[in-house]
Length: 416
Image (cartoon, rainbow, N blue to C red; front, top):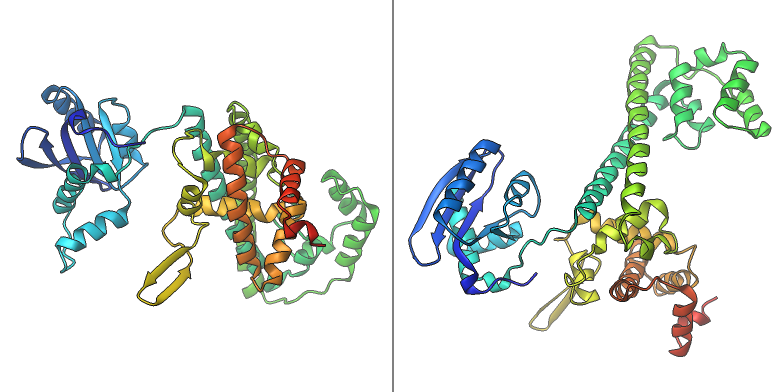
């Protein structure tokens, strides 16, 4: 991940990428002259541009741009003579602001600033080092799955709002709305009048087909159907809401099937990676969070020199600012949100499954922390533990860690 030496490159390129075209600024290593140009965002134009660079320069070319993934990165990574230096957009923005206090911005100027950064401050930048194909597949899969889960939440929230307008009883009969049985029920009986017409044997058969085997649950729902009263008979409310519910049910059904397909693919890919066993055995990880934790750490053990670097990069560690006699701590804003979600969600899942994690959480609450603050503090502590397990390739063992706490006389073991 360290920068290349000064003699490693025959040319330097700064790129300001966009959706339809990319502005670039180029400088040969043996010259101070800079050239600017534009490349259309098409595979043919990019290949032609790269071919011209290959014919002109015989050696590695440093490329600096403010993204670490995306179609342009995918295109450039096909060629082994490109060494990519991804920039944080905030870095380029601050660099621009230092020389343009007016706030003026232009794509060619940004491309030249990116070039200036890689030429003058290359020792402060890191190169993009792709992980294995399987790890990159898993990374994309878990992020896409999270997007589908967010879609599921959005659809169920809209479904809840629509049902409250004319058929609120359905929400009380089914505790979980993101299920196949809920979708099938509304698809078959979209209004209270529809379900009231159904025979008792029909309802019983429906619940049995969906593996509802507890007779008391089935009978309670059937009694609820018979005793239910229509909220409104206004067709201006019922008909639009019924169509909305039917549309949302179809969307939810497709989303649920897609999530199941992603789960199967994630499981099959994760099991091929050697480090998966380090995370699959963690308390509370399970089939969902274990692959996400594997992606969070990755397979390049030189990427983070210490646990503190990972804590800071993921946004779990707070930011401390000092100025004069003032000192304040605040939430870290610039961080990969999905990575931070992974650690926080998993830390919360460990509270009922790990003795020391539950004790630490109660200790934080007793000190006046809110639930979210306590879970973040727990995630901070977990990262230090996992980092050592990851570096040493040793699975986490609860008994081993409890013995270590006991040797240090930790107050967590005294917490009841």
